[in-house]
Amino acid sequence: MIIYNKFKYFKMRYQPISNRFFRSNRENFTKQMNENSFAVFYSNDQCPRNGDQYHPFRQNSDFFYLTGIEQEKSILLLAPACPNKKLQEALFLLKTNEILEIWEGHKYTKEEARSTSGIKDIYWLEDFEASLKEVMSYFDNVYLNSNEYIKFFPDVEAREIRLGNTLQLLYPLHKYHRAAPLLSRQRLIKSQQEIDLIKEACAITNKAFRSVLSFTKPGVWEFEVEAEISYEFTRNRAGGHGYAPIVASGKSACVLHYTENDKVCRAGDLLLMDFGAEYANYTADLSRTIPVSGKFSPRQKELYNAVLMVMKEVKKLYIPGNTINEINEKTNELMEKEMIRLELFSKEEVMEQDKNSPLFKKFFMHGTSHFMGLDVHDVGAKHQPLKSGMILTCEPGIYIPEENTGIRIENDILITDGEPTDLMADFPIEVEDIELLMNR
Ligand code: GLY
Ligand code: MN
Ligand code: MN
Image (cartoon, rainbow, N blue to C red):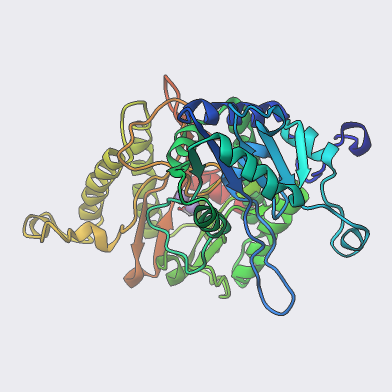
């Protein structure tokens, strides 16, 4: 536990991260920049809810990665070749005042921001315009950031896009470049520091899962299970959930993004849960499926073990050089075989199937893996060869609405130069272990 006044750190929920981490992230970013250039990064918006309320603030993942600063309206300037040394690495923050402190609470002091980020030159926002003008006069090229997640189409324009557009209007004769590919390259490979934070997120998630195993019984509501999870997360210093938790009993488990969590868990049904604690902004991503009554039926056990067997096989592919695309293909192949064995369709039907719409897709319609880290679906693409230090999920599943059943099992895997490391190896997963823990 740190002592607030002694170390001048600002955030207290998680153990402070050494600013060496953020310094080295900035250094690795600026090393990739063209000469004759500088970069500007904006923090996330405070997202409006209704009335005078905002949604809880979550820092932009890249901004956090480069600074450790978790405050709205912040700006980072990286100009390592700037002749004015005071602007080579500068952070611009909201200046607090007595009224803001009374209504919203404490904002970073310059000293706290310096200590958190490792950036020497901290300014208030009112200095940004003049500083920007000065830096613009020295360089021809500017790096701006944006969320380039390929399957994400938000209606709301991000702050970095809005402010980036303004900048391009004010300085139309400069050349603008994408910061995202550079950052994505960096964020894909987790440092030891990041691996430790994700391990902590996993450890908290494990506690919550174990608590759910002893809590769940026929008649409990899905939201009561969710409450158990949230309780364990918060009391173990998680910032919250890394994504909206799925607590889906019976048929609801066949809705992949079910988050209503508002049904009663009934005896005889399975309960599919997909949740992950967020610790210091790094997330875990777990899925487990358990029998509400504490015992799998023979058919449920058969289905569950089919998914588990596929998971164990596919995990072996999490080695350098393979890609997510290859992992997906192999999983599909194995799942198809299992589905024939489980009599969901026959071999003959597979031979006659439309290749563009294979039969297995009716019962397993999502990918097996994605990168994870600061975001649950983190930066990185499906064709990229795996490398040591990457962390991905392994999450085969089977969804059969006709049988009132959806099963997904999901662990988080660290790629190493040798065997893959399952970061959730100590989570209950075997039928016997789950049953034992539910009936203690
Ligand atoms: N929790 C989201 C996913 O498993 O991809
Ligand atoms: Mn996942
Ligand atoms: Mn998940």
